[in-house]
Image (tube, rainbow, N blue to C red; front, top):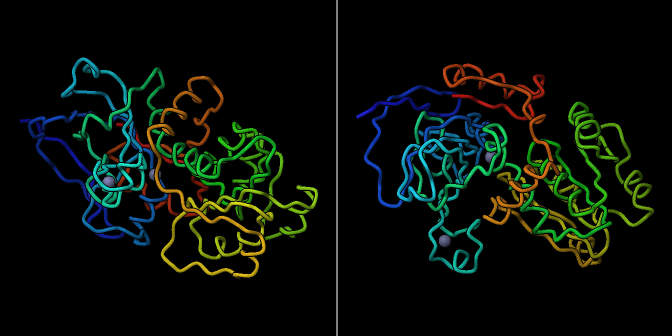
Length: 340
Ligand SMILES: [Zn+2]
Ligand SMILES: [Zn+2]
């Protein structure tokens, strides 16, 4: 029996290494040797203690790239091949699952959130959740999941060619939403309070319109940009209550508002303002296999290059000490990536 190291978040602010033993391969499972762990807002919030749906202790980590060690389906997954995983353990039986909405299963268990995740040298997952690497490298594979979240939000909004899409929040999820809105032919407006992130949107993603609500007259600028129409799609990727409440007023008549970001409070908005727009409000949770496939083919076909998202790197042995610094806005982390 081989032993391996995991990193456990025992309680907010406390990450400690632990030793586990590799157990026998369970039925219909694949054993993975973890090679990359992308650090997500969810991980940072779990560490910071502000993540809803969270219990401790927990092994974090759901944005993974790995090498197959052994699989229940050796014809599909060879030892040594590179893969990512869809970290959403759905039941397959509830109404959502039966309707193909596996991303919002009523008893969803997300790896690294509701059950132990991939901040570990090894992880066993159901083989049905393993996704072939398709020629992508390890860094790219670890970025597929966060990009799929953005892709799903854009799919939810059914973004059409030529629409103005306002994406609020230019973190990794917002960036993904912007990329896929662009791929759908939308004219993308990026809004964030962080000037460095807005620069990144312009320089790395080629986003034409940027708005910083700290300095800018948001409504006036949106009117100018859209020729008086306002954006027909507003996407929240902040998970900030104030930003979410403000987002309602930016929506065009007949518009859609998609909440990808998540926070703990109650949303409130003016019913008359919402009603007169005949607006649609929807949440967007996780992603489906279609979103994962779309992301992988977009990276493979060079429609997007997510590697510049990686602003910080660490090794598995140093991640426990580096974590705190990634929470500091001064460090301007977009995506921190851990290598093993
Ligand atoms: Zn994530
Ligand atoms: Zn289900």
